[in-house]
Amino acid sequence: MSYTLSLSCGCVVYVSCHPDTRVAHTRVIEARGAACRDRRHEVGLRLYLWELLPEPIQSAALEWEQPDVWRARMSPTAR
Image 1 (tube, one colour):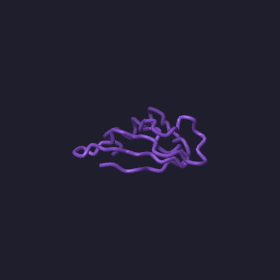
Image 2 (image 1 turned 60 degrees about the vertical axis):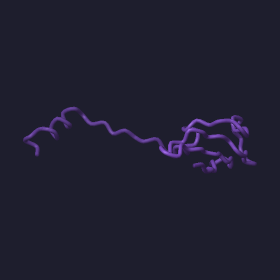
Image 3 (image 1 turned 135 degrees about the vertical axis):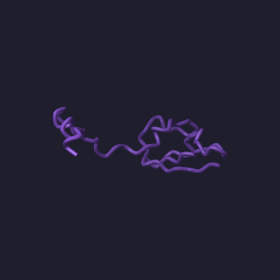
Image 4 (image 1 turned 180 degrees about the horizontal axis):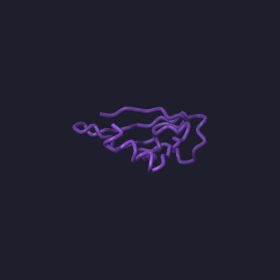
């Protein structure tokens, strides 16, 4: 089982999967995009899984609460 993916830079990646588990075990650049500016994108080179993921648009903002607020929400009397 195999398929091809197009990256945002225009490169085409060949992905090969195990037929029983369907886990991708090989990711190879099949064709380089005309506008690709990434030096590592050479035809025939393997890619790591995280290199196929899109760039994050915005980082997630963490919301921190005061421990007293959390304890008040978890107390049995607050329910």
